[in-house]
Length: 388
Ligand code: SDX
Image (cartoon, rainbow, N blue to C red; front, side, top):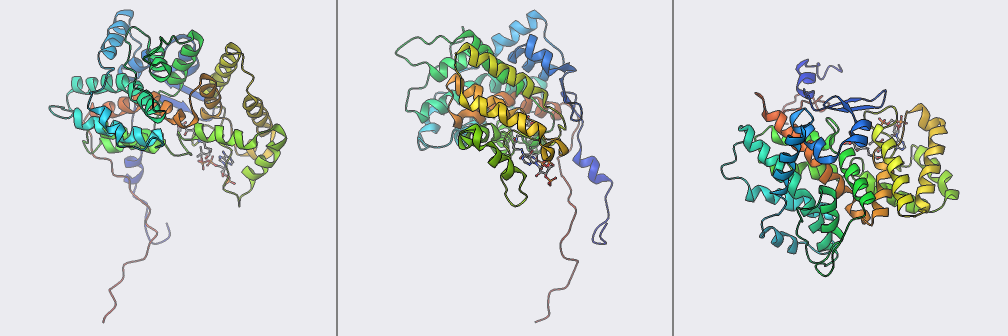
């Protein structure tokens, strides 16, 4: 203590929270959802099944899964008046700015009779959000390119439906490549939840005041947007394009190590992982699969792999335990699928919505208090106003 303040033991207890949803072991690069390793879920499960797991703590039986999927399908459309919100934005508005606004506006459509203390009402909020986020995300993209919005087609799987809303048009039938749809679903799954990250903590804190859940999710989208968090996937692509050629990598490595240069290697490092982010390993494998399937040899992938190899051998990164994170390879896959860079973080927000609403629901499922992080005061000591 500096004499200005003394530690309040309650400080730590208000800063930490309890949760059953996700476990991370940063030192060993372990990520479990409901006890299941992310690698096994990525290989054997799918996004909606993981949504069920995050919400309920158990994998669904085949019957429960079918009921869950059918319930989601009943909520995929948005109120027709929601379309008006888009027209208020400039066409070149960043899709994340639109997402913050439009998702927040859902609180104007779904608020009456919503009792957040009723477990069923909380469940319906989750269903609505899981179902509507792909529709809203695709609307953001369609609005930005001046194409008509596509309605969801509930005969399709979740990822296929999203892809047809993104790339379909009223003039011709769009059929998603099954490999691409599987890769899209895996990207949703890998981003689904990640314990108390900045955006999830934002949602929990906003939710602790009893605020409308859709407004709370909007606050999570806002927090995710930053390049230090979910905005990193867009920033990785921008960085790789700026590097442009493997011969320029050393210059960027030097910049990343320069304490006077605030440039950081996007897609590297993590607040918790001091080892490989297990999601990055799966993402890298998916990247190879998608590019092989599409027969694409993206020079950016070569730069990314070379950058990873150099960084993993460089003493600066090794000493600081900086490894590729979930955002390092995801952008290359999304680019190969044809998704524009400014939509990358929207995809992250779409995927993470289940994590946000699961944590929000968990918070309200037991007696709770409003969140109130404390501070370590370092300002002026008490003093009197100067006499006139
Ligand atoms: C996500 O929390 C979550 O779980 C988030 C997330 C999720 O799923 O919700 O996993 C998603 O946000 C992943 C992170 C995406 N962000 C990026 O890829 C942006 C680039 N990464 C950095 O900005 C950084 O690594 C952070 C923001 C992720 C973490 O920042 P910290 O906590 O400041 O990193 P640190 O304490 O480990 O830093 C230790 C040292 C520092 O240098 P020194 O003061 O010791 O000299 O490592 C340096 C940092 O400057 N450092 C980097 C670096 N990351 C840390 N140097 C160069 N490049 C980097 N990327």
